[in-house]
Image (tube, rainbow, N blue to C red; front, side, top):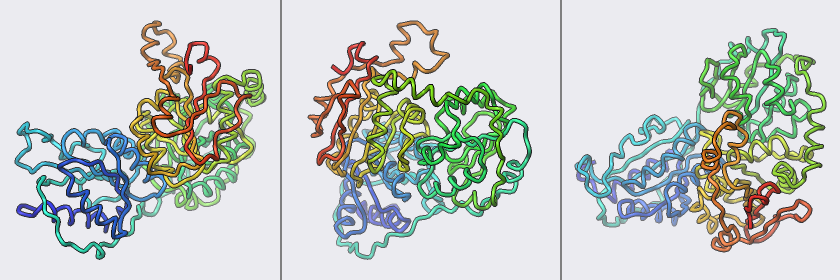
Length: 516
């Protein structure tokens, strides 16, 4: 491309992306990528693409990730050169493990600046390593793509006519699923039975997974992010982490994303349990040996044929009876605990259009304590790398056009992504509720047994307590604010014209001075 003007490089590069099906762009402006923004402005004016504007690259990457979740199509984040590119790494990693088509369009200084130490000149080529492809022509859309474009800052706007840009079709082809070995494994008889663990699912996968589990009639562990938690409740193993640790099955079939519960991690040491996974990213989700089949479940499961019903094999699940009732009794006895609050929030959020659960405690608490009466199909999470980066941004990106969108996060998770709230000015606000469970930060670590023996000082560092005035935060970003400390005082927060920040202060956090 030597001798080609920056304007022409930008036009040609964006034409290739648009023709490959990249129709949405999140832009963070800078001197080096100004020419890309100018071309995109003309493309949007011509009705060819949709452009979102951000000021902070890390959050912008996660917002773009959220867009890929809801559309199933690529979204590009466009940044300038230098460390702006490095800010995208967390979202790239998350997109890789979710197998999302996130595109990184990064402006770069010309090649002769590499290795020079000149301003805004870092080694951008290959900066994302194995987490992103670098060849648009061979990109399959099963993960991120990095397009690095060398540009001069000076450019002259050309007279190009953008009406001839055509948005191409985008589809990921997993090929014909090879299911023979998995089918044989499912039919092998066993004394200790099979458990199905259902993780994150796409909306289009849910119907096939539901019918498969119904026909198989095996015990099920269901993540809320599958959208099937309530629909499959008659098969659910209540308090699964404890029950299955005490009574390991012979086989575990995982469908969809990696489960958030403790038992999945316990499988690292339960080598006598045979594990199969069927998922989009083709990764087994365990450090030990396990089988995996990459593909979309709406194609894989029908190829297996009608599953054989396993019948009543739950006798090996000793002590299951009564666990559900004991959970209900605990919720009734401690209504203002964090678990009680999750039950209350789930009742209200269930009538919305979507729910987003931030890592990690809200996900686990929703799985265990949320209501069971009303199906909640559209539950989104970031469980690729299990980090708390970019959670607000991903929620806003995934629910940008939705009314009555609920997001439930811990206080520390919100503080990690305050820049993400900038996008409130570009998304639907009606009925939007941002729930902050203010428990003093980092309380997921209180649930990890191996950390209980740490010193008080070390535990304090793990908790990362950072009291903040969430009312002032809400005001600063133009949200209404509601603080509640008792479930009896809560009369709902949704169905308003403006976004609401709902600060929940569980009873144990009040005693430590949080949420005041």
